Length: 328
Image (cartoon, rainbow, N blue to C red; front, top):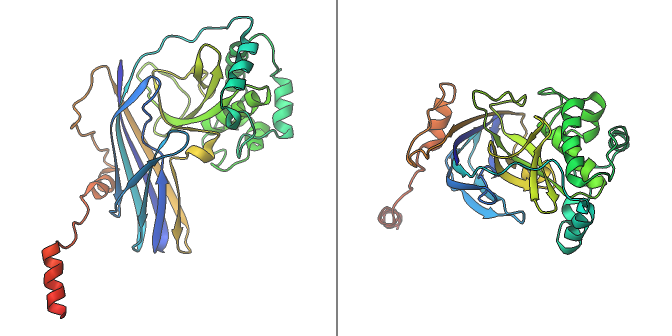
């Protein structure tokens, strides 16, 4: 059993003050499959009330509205996650696996994860890539997935800032470089094209001393989950050529990035915005105390302290009554 403590800092800075910000976040780790979120908190500066709901994919969503004028928005999410170690995924399935998969699809509700979506589309470049990698129904579904995982790892160079969060899939395919989001969208589209349900996963990847992942350590991460007979949803990380378990911490699942972005919102005002994100993940074999405070990096300290200050309580009922009496 592993335990992970996560702190996720997001800062939006505006060149001119804005009069209102409305924001949704998906940073609350999921409690399903092999992981359980033991604690979660979301701190916001300027201070405000934070509400939550569960979307139709089962993701926990926090949302808030800041109506006052401000020139900076800071969000600090802190989580403690317990994760059970899973058994290794086999190299192949039984000879009837394609038929078994089609039966699962017929009996279940997987349509959303079988069709093109906002960022996982069947473009000519994607279809050409499918031909060159021989992504067709052969062998068994798991063997195809394993092979594609390695092929995409070798096809793409991992290159931070080479694409944007809203880049179409073709930019990465044509340039043969991208980030974890591009790896995931490409794999999802290729698998859906041959009738394998695939979904996008947003979360974090813990990096220990002996791990040599090429994805950026101080950032959120993205990978793929594939529906397979006898195994259900299996996590695949083409960015690092890994099976996504034990070190992968899941926060949200959806059709693609559009469904699971850590932050999504709007502001009122005409100004430019600058985004800064930093993530710290610590791992341990024993559960840390629930009241333990993560150390705050020096460059985060002021931002975290401001976000974690308790909100103003506002006037009490007695004070309101006294003010009303004075106005009469």
